[in-house]
Length: 223
Image 1 (cartoon, rainbow, N blue to C red):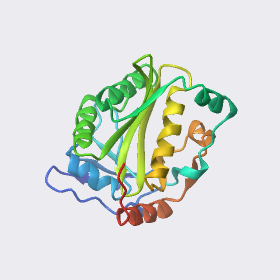
Image 2: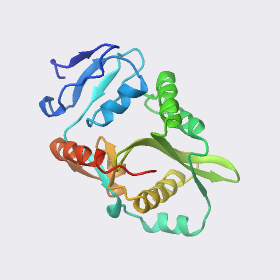
Image 3: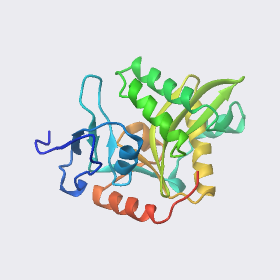
Image 4: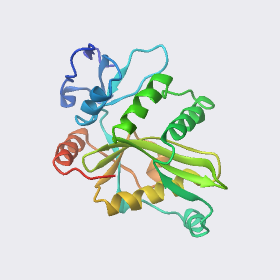
């Protein structure tokens, strides 16, 4: 645990430099989920992540997991599912339901950090055209997908859910295609996981990631 984490208040959106944080990445606590504070955090390579009854915790871990769009891996089984056109893919059709489904999916597992106030904040970010959803439908029902934040030419992935086999992966595949066409560089996956690694994600140093974020802000793309 970083014992020198920075306390935030509701009146300042300043964050400490993540380069001086330890590898665990806990850089600050407190403040609020004002959309402008959240966007400020993302532009500095920082994101909120905390459990119920905890203060708001702000992170910038080292290493950082990212998915370069050209390195997205499509397994044989996923390619077969995609070719069958089982799912109808939409973007930003129902952001609110998508984030709620992501929260519900985690509640049934290890618990969720996507608390009610987080849902409310990211819906506001969606209304401001910063947060976006990618959605898979089966017979008109939302059965998979996820959401994230658009910063410069980076899409910061937040969470995904699936109610049917491969639904979230198919939605992610089409998200990657959309991002490529729009000139995005990569998807920020935040923290390492074997699942994301199987899809082609890799770890890079926090220093390299912060450099990518800084450059991305000078090269913004439209989702």
